[in-house]
Length: 357
Image (cartoon, rainbow, N blue to C red; front, side):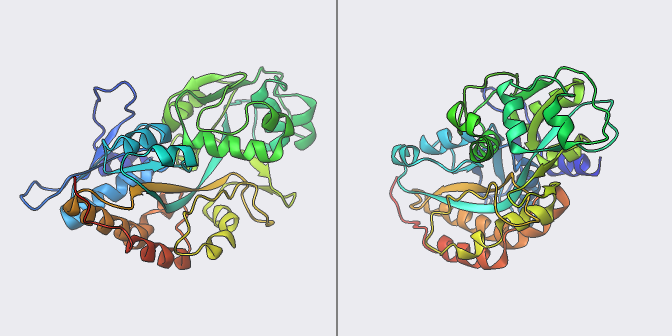
């Protein structure tokens, strides 16, 4: 309830004319001749945090930011078409997508770390489930169809599992959350890798589609027997249980800020300032690492065509990396390691603000 109140206070969610628009958020800055509107679109994964950032930044700097929470695929598409000032994605752009971006070279700026969690609605269960990537792969392939299947029972000795059908809920839109989840399944499940594979959109063998993290969370919450995947904040907001997942070290780990940070340890410290930062940390080594963890990125053009907006965008990114970090943990996101923030600040300094329209 506390997080829902934070979101309600932090963002104005508007009805949209576009069929793919999930929701808008505007920082509630007072109008003035000095304010500059920035527009962005993309991932729902970090939306609870971004809406808080935009509201806080509007108050502090009198810069209004309008963000469409439409999914990573939509954000990449709008950035590529130059209909927004920045995109947001949990899936790094492919080389092919980068080559099609009309504004030139796109920079991936990590903002925070988050967890994709496996959530479920099984009223009979009184304790958290334990699952492995192999079993998850078989569930989402439709091979395992009952909650009391032997493969699930073997991981949960002593747990009274019901003979319910498993109803899979997955994303219906182009989704960075789906990319993270299927990236993980491809790393740990050979049948999944050979079948649907990884991507923002894959050919799902089974399941009900939900639009956005909120759509999946809503379906799981309202439908007994379901299993789905969402960003941790959405499970927390909806009071949904989450499974402990066995990591690469063989340990069952529940998602938390600490276990997500552990997944990034080592990787983040090694990235140079000039890196493109398109790195995966799923199934990371380490006994305490949560295996379905990821960076999420803001996408910006290296060369800005509007010098005034470009300056405001760079200033906001710098604020988000430093001052904005304090808002991450209360909303179940892990801040970036300080050493990585320093390198990202150096990268922001290379953004060019002198392009001609």
